[in-house]
Amino acid sequence: MSDTVRNGEYDDFLDALEEDEGYYDECSNGHGLLPPRQVCPHCGDRELTERPLPETGEIVTHTTVAVPTPQFDDDAPYVTAIVSFGAVRLTGIVADIDPDEVEIGQSVSVGIESNATTGERTITFRVA
Image (cartoon, rainbow, N blue to C red; front, side, top):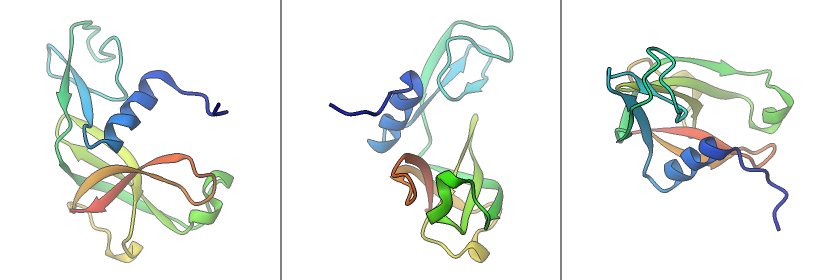
């Protein structure tokens, strides 16, 4: 038996990303929600519909981390980015690219990989 404790809907979301079946929730007013929620924090709507996450998104901002937290000690330096997938944005690590080559507006796909330090699942982007 594993010692890993699951974090409910968040781990379900990571599972879906691993299986290339990413999703987000959308309320009747069009607000996109991540991680999946029970109530829209923008308008209080409880009528949420699951929508497929687009296959690619666009980097809206990024930073290179040279001095990491202990959870990412062996991963540094790495690039953390916020990526727009239409109605929602995800934060993750940009993999397999020189930090100097990451650009705002770059198209990326999303997946899940294990980080080098702890082996925990991490939202990861790759240039599309």
